[in-house]
Length: 269
Image (tube, rainbow, N blue to C red; front, top):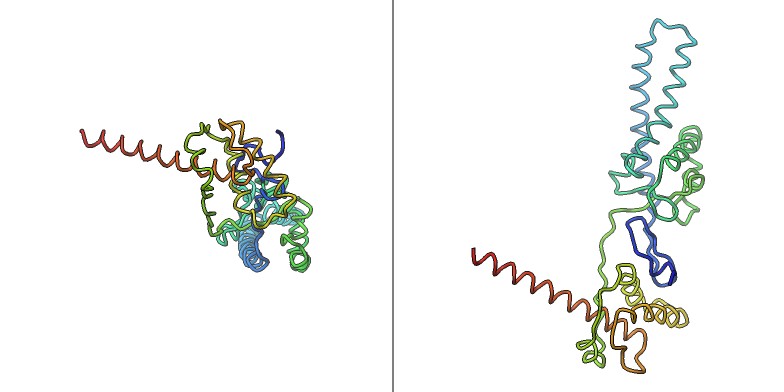
């Protein structure tokens, strides 16, 4: 199957599909304001330093050269520097790094030079020329807290420091315990394993129609790695829970055997 629910996951992927969707939490408007204020203060300080250096360097130069130096300074400080920083850090300015934020694409992937350049260019207008009012109002009405530069670049800001909440492991259905103990179960692909775990963890929030449809598709995929098939009449949800629970028990047992083996080798030395 080519459905995105079963695609192999990478750090840049955003798994889509009802009941198995992964989403990065957008940054709150307050944290974005604090982060932006830090960046603005940093930029202003940098601007003053560069202007002083440029003024000293062009002290005896004519007025035209001084104007060119001023324009060059503005371009470098307000566009080149933030673009370079966000490109090299994959979306982290100084303020975002302090607040634990990051700029990502709308599909949650890392931003590129193009995204950073558009954000910096629009940001110069909406933040510095217009006093930040457009950016603030746009973030208030946006579900993801987007400013105008984010809309133009196709990006948004996410929270990286999110408290980790691990879902409870799937429990073995009692009536399938005997079958699971004797069944031959291969290792599931990472994407399929995560999709099944997310599906089982979100069962209470899924409507019955989607629950049956997604569960059936996942069960069909998992059956390719399991033999013999579960007893007749087994529901897709019970089958998936039995497989995930059995694989977890077997993996824990394998890790324990490997640890015991290493301990025996060490003790013999």
